[in-house]
Amino acid sequence: MADVWGRSAVRDVILTLGAAGAVGLAAQIAVPVPGSPVPITGQTFAVLLAGVTLGATRGAAGMLIYMVAGVLGVPWFAAGASGWPTATAGYLIGFVVAAALIGQLAALGADRSPARTIGLMAAGNVLIYLFGVPWLAFSTGMDMTSAITTGLAPYLVGDVLKTALAAALLPGAWVLIGRRTTEETER
Image 1 (cartoon, helix red, strand yellow):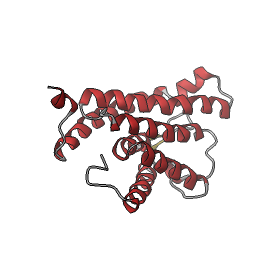
Image 2 (cartoon, rainbow, N blue to C red):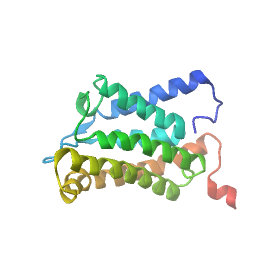
Image 3 (cartoon, rainbow, N blue to C red):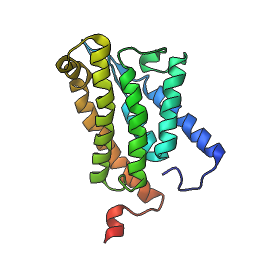
């Protein structure tokens, strides 16, 4: 979506840094979950939107910048944390992978209709959990059932809400910028 009005190296850098900053800002919306080291944040929504709007390369680069800068001391992980986040590092790695995959899928048109956007966002969330939950289990010594109970289950309702919001916003954004939806071009 970011390439609709052209592309340049300066624009790429600004968009990539902006994506990292947006995720850092979204991470400050943090609600602790009792019994879990993983808070509810706006991060996943920002990560997935960055991947969709910027594409695979810039989306993943933005998440890599977010992760590395936070590890090096920028206080923009959940609730202003920084450094190596032992229990949640897997989710950060999942951010990079998810942004790359859904950025590629969006480039193929997976964000042009509400139904496809729902699938796209669900796939991104699954990838984040595929990295985050096993890492949580490994880093804390939990078994996988406990990691799923504390690092996945409490977040599913929020993920459904974020996915619904994206399904409402992204196809509408394509209409606003003058691009037709995939369904319209198939008719």
